[in-house]
Image: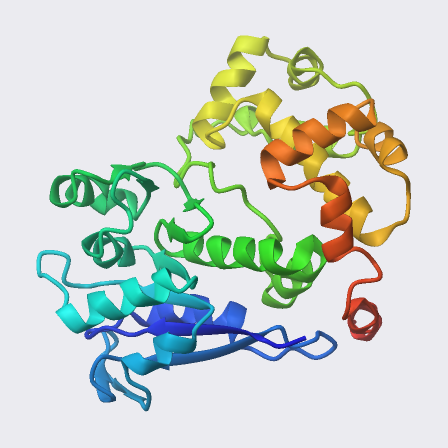
Amino acid sequence: MTPHRVVALVLPPQSTFELACAAEVFGVSRPGLPTRYDFSVCAEHPGAVPTLAGYDMAVRDGLTALETADTVVIPGWQRPDEPAGPAVLDAVRRAHQRGARIVALCSGAFLLAQTGLLDGRRATTHWRMAAALAARSPRVLVEADTLYIDLGDVATSAGTAAGIDLCLHLVRADHGAAYAAHVARHMVMPPHREGGQLQYAVESGRASDSLAPVLDWAAERLHEPLTVDDLAARAGVSARTLARRFADRLGVSPGRWLLGQRVSAARALLEETDLPVETIAVRVGLSSATNLRRRFHRIVRTTPAAYRRSFGSHHEGEAALQAGDAQQP
């Protein structure tokens, strides 16, 4: 398998954290895992590029590196009030036109918006800068409280850890849930957070309000015909109170969270077993193959059969993944 080429466009003064998010996910070779990505960086002017951390980084490649990138990452843009250089904007547009995926982490959304590729489309950034992005780019549909948004050809994330969430999400989309889970495990990160979750939660300060017990309880019983009322009863609150807590902490309804867990469990079974779709549907609580196919397509944007062909146990590299598991302490 030819590695997917990821090129990060560094912009002075470069944020070291957002760049490190992309480099850690796409650029680190991990024992026991097949290499699926080739990571590099480029700049408009190769040479010494200053960073926010007080040191310069040496960048060898110029904008021509974007001409062969499969994914272009914009790891932050520290001058949102200023127009980016025409050469930079043209290089990003050309990469997009020939089919490269453009990914903006945190304030990188400001530069991506300048290209026009977000006009009329949903995007996010750090909650603190969302109002400024909306004001400077009124044609962009800014969502201030979302972790990340993946539109297929372009993707944007909130700040800090949300950049890692988006990168892991892209790995999941490229190479399946099992491979992404292995990368996350090496990074000691949660394997997957849905992009629609809130950037930050409203905390009540009461331990009794924690959703963790009911989430863990439900995750172990996906094969059962659980309902929102069942979750509320387990939490000892009304369905309305539970819905409010889910909205405050996760940014989704209990029903949507439960469906997401069922589909995630189905993805794992499609990758790791040869079970028929009908059996998988029953095991994850979606009752029938027809229901699973409909729900799966709505969330994953493909069919269970097509997903299994791409990421099933016969897929190239599965033996290496299993070997990697065997080597873990």
